[in-house]
Image (cartoon, rainbow, N blue to C red; front, side):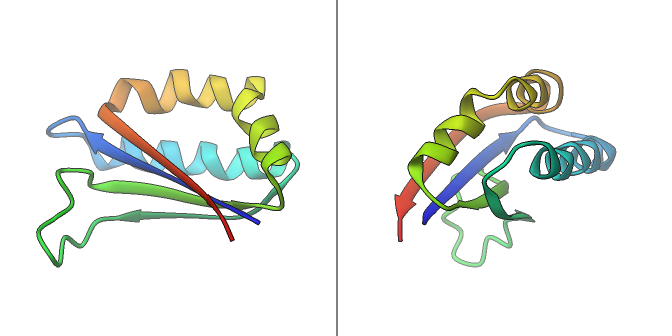
Length: 99
């Protein structure tokens, strides 16, 4: 199993609607691209004051690395990144690990 985390530094004064659009489109990806076992979204609660302004996270679980690679290179994923992620972020951090 592969855990895939994507953390975002969001642009300042981002309307809530933009995150809702992102979540809706990511949920559609999980129906269109095989191999996504689970997906979750969340905003930092910043309990320890160490989020370094990465305020939003998408976490996913894939059965194996091949399915993660398929997801990353899939045209639908690239489209969501271009239309719904790139315009709203200042920075991104991706962290994958095998469990």
